[in-house]
Length: 201
Image 1 (spheres, helix red, strand yellow):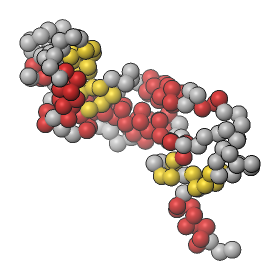
Image 2 (spheres, rainbow, N blue to C red; image 1 turned 135 degrees about the vertical axis):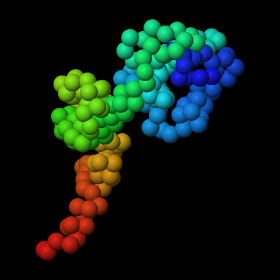
Image 3 (tube, one colour; image 1 turned 180 degrees about the horizontal axis):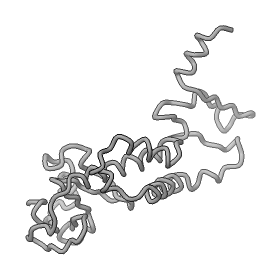
């Protein structure tokens, strides 16, 4: 099976889904930086300058489709365009920015500027425009927190997951729980606690 010479790759019915997941972790795409996520949450595979997405699973095969401009090639035909490693790198950058939007409180514009500032122009040419990326980052954050505004009572508030973290560091130092008569939440980082210890009183 050669991913780099076909638009579509069909994988036999036997152990269908297991085979696809093995493909994602095989030597062909061994490193995690070659397995990306699309905006719809689908797996995207970067391989030799091309991007492939899993389009659908049918009874007898898994359908992988090449991602790229002016794609017309069909099964067992060569690509209609040259590999583009810069496009693959740009896709990884977009995925990284979307992940940042989910786990920290930085503004989309800040995430964008900090990410692209040291990127060469060849990579920047492959990225969508700034406004498009910032809109995507806002959507990531909105979709990630769409139910967070439902809580209007401190007694029922649940602080967990990313809400208990700051830059992947534990932020919630103490929570006496939703059953407590008076809810007490203490936020801080280990570094801030050390500053308090070292401070003159």
